[in-house]
Length: 322
Image 1 (cartoon, rainbow, N blue to C red):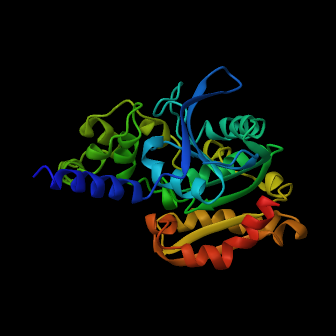
Image 2 (spheres, rainbow, N blue to C red):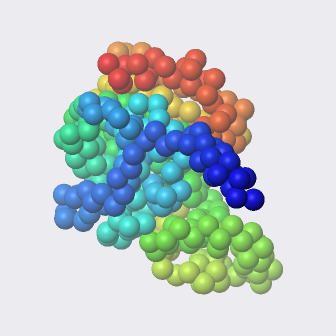
């Protein structure tokens, strides 16, 4: 046994040393000040052994930054600095989460703060899907000087495809608002389909008004009632997204991605159509659109679009990195 032990130790050590090593470094709990004094929480992923300033990819999310760890690894391993930031009032960020109403100005401040850091070469892009797709359009209409490009994927268009497509509010909105309530991630509650279906059914069979759905579901802390007071696409929703005058001034490369089965396809295509209608002829030459055989989450799963990234995304990334 004594003769075997050194051999076992040798092979164990050799196996550990031969394992894949992390070729990225991380800065956790970075506090970024907004113009009103609120600090948003960021986790930064940087390529290891790269000291020169690099382009930064910004992702602003209400879904808690820890859940984006694999994406941080992916982008940092491919030569970018990746900044995942908790939305105001979510995760470790200060303030109160007010869906769709805060991201435009916060996005501007984040872009400009990142551009001034020593690890950034002055170029910042935004990337992300769904709510993070919306964030990009909201930020773009504020025209931060250092925003070089955006890659909005499966983008929500408030008041168009969510929460009231065709002016009809969906029951799903209360489960999503609960998912994004408070500062923690709430995936277990959100994923309890039996709980939500029971509540939806209770309202239906008892002929209760839709306006009581938040009370029935046990969460009256959200903007549910505020949203119900805006059933049409009025100024409340219109002010969240770019308008004609914003599209007319946009002049940066933009890659829009959506899927044939994407629940937010209507939102993504609405942005695209409005851009192509109002943007300048020069800006239109920099606008790219990919529609693939994906559902909502499939539009941004890293393992799926790698071939498409090689074919379609390289011109955009090349421009960004130059």
